[in-house]
Figure 1: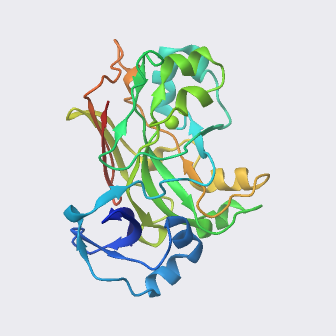
Figure 2 (figure 1 turned 30 degrees about the vertical axis):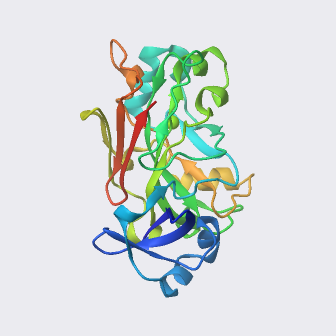
Length: 281
Ligand code: MG
C-alpha cells in the first residue's frame, strides 16, 4: 500500500493510492498516526471510500505533525563521509559508531511545498535525500533480527541543512531543525511491499541536474542495527520517524560547493516510494 495524507475540500484525510497512483481512496482513520497504530493488517482489511483523482486534492507530508522530533543519522554512507570531511574535517573524522541527532519538526513540508531559505539567518542552504523509516509497533529492546517486524513503512525525507549554522554551533540541532527544513513524502510505502533490508535507488536532482545517485543498501549502519541500538535504551513509539542518512552529492560536497538559492527546485526520489519535489523560497 502507498498511503498519503491529503486535503480534500479543506478537510485532512488519510488514504490509499489506487494501483495506477492517479487517485486516492480515503481510509477511516483520523490521521496517519492513527493508521500507523492500527497496523498494516487492519489497513489492508479496511474498506476504503470512493476514489478521488489526485489532481483534485492537495498532498501533505504523510505525517504532517510528527509526535516527536525526527531521529536522524549523520554520515551514514561512506562516500558522503569522504565529501563531508573534505568540506569540514570536524564533520566526519573517524566515526566508528553512528552519529545520532534529531530534527525539530512542528510541521513537515509536503510534496510541492516550500523549503524556507531564512534569508539573514542561513547562508549555506543544502539538501540531503534520505530514506526514512516509520516505526509501527512500539520498539523496546528489539534484537536486530526482529527489527523489521517493528517497521510500518518508508518515506522520502529531505534533511534540509543550514551548513554554517550546523558547523558554527557544535550541535546540529539548530542548523537542521529550522521551520520548513523537513520535506517528507509523497507517501508512505508499507513495509510489506519492500524487501528487508531495503536496497532501493535513491537520488536527488536540483533544477533537473542529478546530484545524488546511490542505493539504500549502502548504509554504513543498517536499519536493523539502528533499531536494535536505539531501542536498547529508548522506547520507539508507533509513528517514530528515523532518517537513515544521506548519500554523497550534497551541495557542500562539490568544489566549489553548490548551495541552494531561492527558486531552486529540489527533487528527492526513492525507488518504490516516489518523488518529493520542493521549491526553495
Ligand atoms: Mg542527514
